[in-house]
Every structure is written in structure tokens, then in C-alpha cells.
Length: 203
Image 1 (cartoon, rainbow, N blue to C red):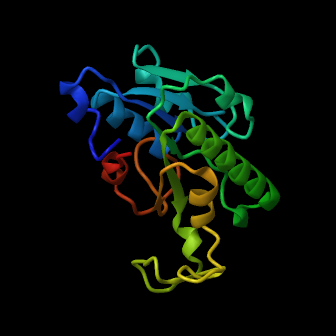
Image 2: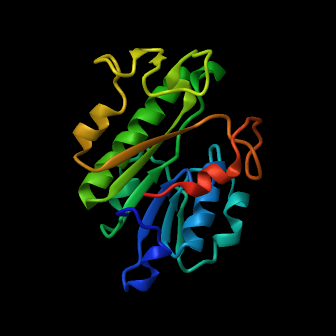
């Protein structure tokens, strides 16, 4: 959103509209808190397979928030959305393969991301793609760097398939961000990322 938060835009007559996928999860629900507090209109999408309505219950009756209990892998989810969207934050994803259902992880995450990028391209909006530190592979030396090797080779080499193809194929401005084992109110998993990290996200 041109480096400005929704709060910065309050002096102008234009409100920002942000779509958040995975809005009922840990990161999504905290981001929702921040966006609404900053004056944004938010459309939240979640099929509740991983998230819970408890996380977004305080906002369900808000006039600036609309919740869609839908699946990001279904193209019709985005076909029904309006075109006046400024930014899409894609947080919906399936758990990592080491817990099983590896093919489901690939299908859900790949197809969901494809649909999000297609939508962002259609509306001319910016797109923020969230990932996990697992993309860095079994690196024993945190903190990780973009120059570190991953499970598919050096991130600076031609073998790194993410995220350059998404930027090329989507023809829409995109940014990628990552988190590692987030924990706090709204999640049941253990980890070491402070909840304040998700409130600092801007499109």
C-alpha cells in the first residue's frame, strides 16, 4: 500500500481494502486485529481446517470486516470477490509434510497460492506471500539468510524455484515473508516467535 499503513491513509478519503487468507489462524487473526485498528476494510477467508472462529470472534459483527468460510484452492472463492482490493496477504496453508499427507500439502499450498496470485493480478493489487523457515532446509546456523542453501540448493542459484517464478507469472507486485514456529494466544503449537512480529506486517 505504497509504504503507508491504513492509519496513514486516514487523512485521505480513500479506505484500503485487504484480503487475508487463513484469517482465523494465529498469524491471520493477529494481522486482522492490526489492520482493523489501522482503519482498513478486511475480507477474511478461511475454511477453518486449521484456524478457529474463536480467534476472530471479536470482529464478526464489525462493519469493516467480512468473513468468508471458503477454501482458497477453489477458484470460485476469489471469483466472487470485488475488484476494489488493494492488497492480498496469503497466510492460508496446510501443515508441513513431515506430519503426513505430503501430497495434500503440495496440492493445497500450490493451488491456493496460484489462485491468490491470479486474483491479485486480476484486481491489480499487491500480494504478500507468507512462508515458513522450512524453506531454508536443515540449516544448523540460525539466523537464516537469503544466501543460505536450502533443500533445493542455494537460494541464489537457478535451482531456487521460489519466489521468482511467482513474481514473473503473477505480473503483480509481491513480497515474501517467513515465520518460524509462532506461538501465543490463538495457537496451540509451541515455538519461539513473538506475537509482535505479525503486527508489523505491511502491504
